[in-house]
Amino acid sequence: MDTNVELDKIDITGEAPLEEPARQYYFMAKARRHLEAQRERLGRPLTAAVTTFGCQMNARDSEKLVGILRLVGYEMIEEEDADFVIFNTCTVRDNANQRVYGRLGELKGYRRKNPNMKIALCGCMMQEPSVVEKIRGSYPFVNLLFGTHNIYKFAELLCTVFEQSDMVVDIWEDTNRIVEDLPVERKYPFKSGINIMFGCNNFCSYCIVPYVRGRERSREPKDILREIEALVADGVVEIMLLGQNVNSYGKNLDNPITFAQLLREVEKIEGLQRIRFMTSHPKDLSDELIQVMKESRKICRHLHLPVQAGSTKILSAMNRRYTKEQYLALAAKIRREIPDIALTTDIIVGFPGETDEDVEETIDIIRQVRYDNAFTFIYSRRTGTPAAAMEPVPEEQVKRNFDKVLKTVQTVAREQVARYQGQTMEVLVEEINENDASLVTGRLSNNTLVHFPGDASLIGQIVPVCLEECHGFYYMGRQV
Ligand code: SAH
Ligand code: SF4
Ligand code: F3S
View (cartoon, rainbow, N blue to C red):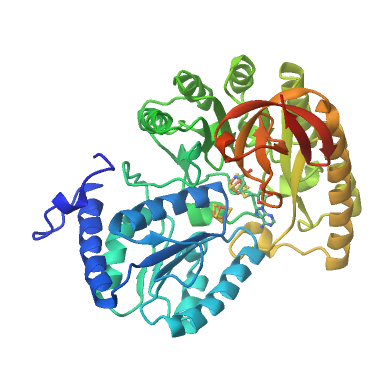
């Protein structure tokens, strides 16, 4: 179905169709009718705000929510005093959860001023039964709770909220369903994320994602390619293929295909200029993928390859299924084949059982691989994961080691990023600089940020920029 479908032409006098996505378009038409009535009653337009708490996949889901909210007639705003407020939550580390509870408390105040306000919560946190219990008990003013598996039903749930006053709760344990062709409104006109797969089967022992996102399932290549073609026709020049482990893409399709083969197909799309992807699990990264990256003109010179820890003992306890030596050999092979690539990573400090010696091994990996950037996290205990039952590391030791790892990351990254000083490279301009409106901000193919003098007319364009001054993780430059 065309996502630009005219909702007003949909007949909502009869029963809702059973097939998808027609059923959701029926409910979008119905929700629009509800909104029109509300607008008339209040004598003003209605506003909505979507807040994203999690990763790129969470952000892409938010774009789907915005697509529907706007189609049914809401005006989208940033502020959280809107008529419809939805938090798309994350639960990967406890601080993500705490932020949601803090913001929910603030919403209670807004709600007092605007009794018309509806509050919805969705995303990964909602897949945890203890969270749902807590919301029911402590935040009874919330109108709607749903999870990650039934987000495609958002329009239908929206109608239920308009039609009943009790809290609407709809959480599924898992699904193998993928609904295509729902509306989506992207944040940037020139770049977009694209889900190629959902869920995760890896069960790293610290990680809650497989429990809240369900089993791995891949989209059909033809659906992915069709979506990218439509995006390119609409002005997109850079795409990011999204999955928890893109290297296992396609294995469970009826006609299996590898991630590398998918990339070859994506490369052929005319007008598309840059291809990125997230995330690659080291255990599944194939020689075929390295070859495709090496030969490609469009795949960016950047690979995010989460290592998590340096010691083989800890990696094994994490259920990562590679050793320190295997990871180092893989990184070396990638560097040999694609010398100008930037490698980035994720690191966890303080996993149960980690000693100072184990942390030295993490530091050794950082020095050997020479990352351009690394996200360093303090281990967060997630209820229900195998690691939650393991003996925690004393807090003081974790803090000390975290600082040590962070310092190493910063030193190495500064040296790595600086290696292009003085060269001219292509920058895709993304936005006006947040702190200085006379500058624009963009990214190199290797994902390094560059700021340089320019104006809004450059946004979405790829321009040559001389990298004049390296400031740690970013450059100041000049368009040439
Ligand atoms: N699928 C991706 C990661 C998604 S979560 C991958 O495997 O690379 C992003 C990062 O959060 C992980 O790479 C890990 O470093 C971190 N993370 C996940 N669970 C965590 C936990 N319990 N405590 C601290 N960091 C965690
Ligand atoms: Fe979590 Fe591991 Fe799956 Fe990544 S691969 S989402 S870290 S279980
Ligand atoms: Fe968070 Fe869910 Fe992403 S837990 S990191 S939003 S998959």
